[in-house]
Length: 370
Ligand code: AMP
Image (tube, rainbow, N blue to C red; front, side, top):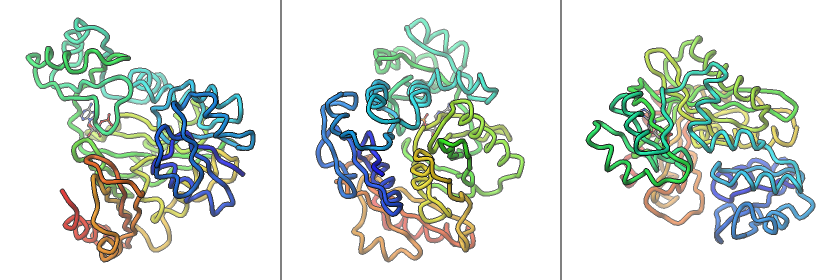
């Protein structure tokens, strides 16, 4: 079986690392040479993801399925790819995830809570948004934002002019979201196969630094059965409503016992990287199983691992020889050149106790460049 992937970054690389043992081959489409998935499969380089000739070279009449590893590919790329092979997850999830307003309207339409928000197209709308949502609020671009890029917190109306100057011209408009003083950030990662089978991973607690995921813990500490049930219902409902196939990650704010959806990613997600070493079946393997119609694997913790943690390596990392000295660390490097703000790898940890996981992560943290 041949899996074609739009994108060739670390997520594509880890999809191949999970799918190759199942007897699959991977081919990736990248818009720049030297992409890190090239270590584990063939990379086709083209000018754009929706370029028909590039997609033809990617699929070559032999790929069984096309998937994507990041959501900022043009929706047209899916349309073009679908002429040559089935594409999963489908266009609906991708287009919803590409627009923060459409995404929130979707969740609200299926009775799932989100932070209050206001869509903005003009400078006048920005004033109206400040009235409707109230200060402080988070001003974000509707489209093409990631890792905290294209957003800022507006503390008072005095900041509206400069915010409009910085973000107002953004293609696709802006969104104002009520600033949520959340108790913590969680993510729930579900998977649904093209045959309709579903499973959900243990809920993960995430800590961001400078808008980029820093650490994840799973299962999130002190989860009540009721909260787990509500989080599982959110992702299961969303997958069902979109007739989804693949892994779906939903980022949540927990506030006063409520769960509000921040955003979704129609793909494998950084907050699920712990599953490679901590879960019985990784999110990468289950994504591949889901889109190829194979039975899903169990999503529960691996025997002997009651708690898992993940520490992102951002910008640069110490040599692998040093990383391997961290007790209990499983090292995952992406083969990418160092660059500020770039995700270059992650460390996974797993143990019978949460304190053991945290102790190892602290030890690792002292070795990392801040
Ligand atoms: P996002 O790009 O929407 O995932 O936002 C990146 C990070 O900014 C989130 O993980 C939160 O830590 C923070 N953030 C985003 N939206 C809000 C909000 N409405 N209220 C408070 N914090 C937010």
